[in-house]
Structure formats: C-alpha cells, structure tokens
Length: 401
Image (tube, rainbow, N blue to C red; front, side, top):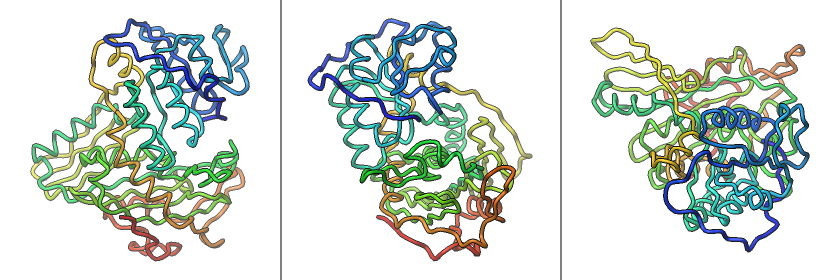
C-alpha cells in the first residue's frame, strides 16, 4: 500500500452501474501501484494477457516511471475520481493506506465502478459498515482482497468437517511467525501506527500482515456474520519502537466455537503461517499461502494434499462477465471486522521489556527469543500467551463483547 491519491474531483458524479454481463476485457484502474500494489500491477498484466482485463489507468501521487511501467503506456493521475471518469473504468483495484479504503471505495461506487478492495477493508467496524452499505446502495460489486479465501482448500476442508472426518470440531488455531526488519515499520507514515492525525489506522500484526490467518480461521469455522462473534480476547504486545502491535494473540468466541490466532513479526526462525482445525477424531493443518493441507485422523495414515487457487481479480472479472459466484463479498468479512474492532478498542500494545527481545544487527530486526514456540503452542492448545506462561506476557488485557 502506498500514499493515498486524491479521491474525487467530481463528488456529484453518479454514473449508474451497468446492468447485465460486462464485455471483456474489463478496463481496470489501479489505485496504489507501489509496495504491495506492485503485485497487483503484475497480476493485472497477467490477466490482461488472458483477455479478462485491460490496465486503463494508475492512480498514484507520484506517477510511475517508465521503468516501473516496463515501457507500457498507461494513463496516470493523482485524482482518483477524474481517472475513473476519463478511462471509463469498470473495475478499480484499491491498494492504498488502510484509512483511505472507505472513501476511495465510495468514490468508485458512486460512478458505478466495481471493486477489488485490499485487506483489511477498513480500520474500524463503523468505517467498514459505511463502505459496505454505500457499495450495496450503489449497486456495484465489491471483492475483499483476502487471497487465501480463493484457495480451493477452503471449501475442501469445510467439506471434510461437514462430513465428520475429524469428529466434533473442538476449536481452530492459527499461527504466524514472520520476521520484519526496521525498514518495514518505516516504509510509510502510517506503518506501525494505531492512529495517524487522529484517524484510525490499526496496522497491527493480526489486522494487516497476518490478517489472512484470522480471516482464514473464521472462514473454516463458517463464521462470517458480525453477530456470530460473541466475544474477543486480545493480548497485544510490541518489541519494536512502533505504536501498534507486532507480537499478539487473539481468542474469538463464536456461536460455533472458539478460535485462537497467535502471530509475531519478531520470529527467530520465520516460517509459513497456518491454520489448524482440531477435532475429537483428528486435525487438519492448512498452510494457506501454499494451498497445502495435512489431514491427520483416527484410523487413517496422514494425508498431504495440494490444491489450486482462484485469483480474486480473475474471479471478479468472471463474476461480472459470466456470473461466477463472488468469493469474498463484504458480508463474508463482517466477523473479521469485529476482530479488527476489538483490537482497535483494546488498550494500546504493551512494549516488551528490554530483556525480552534481542537485535539481529545483520538483519536489522528485533527477535523475541522463544516466541516461535509460543505462537505454535497457542494454535495447538487454543490458549493465549499469558495462559501458556510466556515470560513476557501480561495478564489477559481485554475482552470485548
């Protein structure tokens, strides 16, 4: 995500959303083409080669250079609304700072432009509702950018659960042990912030870099609606000199059970994040970035499975062009946003004491010795750091109903 473009030169322009199937390729405007936006730029080009979309414009405060564009000629502007108008965009991909998501999404919706909106969709539940309700009122389609929910493993695991392959599900855990250097937290003014200039940002480990662990765990539990979340417990900590959290865990109580997700950006040995489904008769481990699944159940040998994945922009194009089912509409992320809201409302993250972390000078990053094991143990036992006896953990901080 990069700096936010100006959102709307023409606030009263309200082109109606086109009805019926859209002709392909769909003209696409990308808002935020640097940082993670570079991935979207490359993906748009991939889908352009397949005839599904056409890159019509790029919205950035500073135009991309010829090298960044790989020599391709494309219209650029810092004025998002004007660029949507001049390009005749059918779809906007929004990969800008978290606090800008809602206003930019509504700018596109007022023009009848459909959306792929990066995760997290908003920094608060109120902003999420404003976005989702505004998009629905405008009659446009919005896909939320949780790419892991495009994995074919998600419906396959849910089918195994429904068939009773694990017996009774007793809970779901999630674990993410990643490493981020000091530069990561200095990449933008909003990075590592809970608020900026009085506006919510909530750029924490569970709400942004490892948000997929939370969203995927909720999806496997079949928990989508806000009302399905009955309680959220948080433990938010930080080793780095930031405002937000980099080592945290959360336990979500839902109408169907409990989910615990633990994550850190201060791992000793960074590894692939995963979600773990516990049952009375077995368990399933899902490494969601790799679309890899390990099924372990009573009476069977371990079975490792690999699945494909549907790209979310491709799915959006096929939804608009041929009526394919949309994979991640806003309604499917309500429960996730309730977790974001609980983290937003929780006390500010507690700095770890100096003896709880160490610096790796060559990698220019901080590590928390032993944190990798506590992250894995939280997913395995559904316990919080404080309940596991982590020496740097504080008593349970907050429960938000």
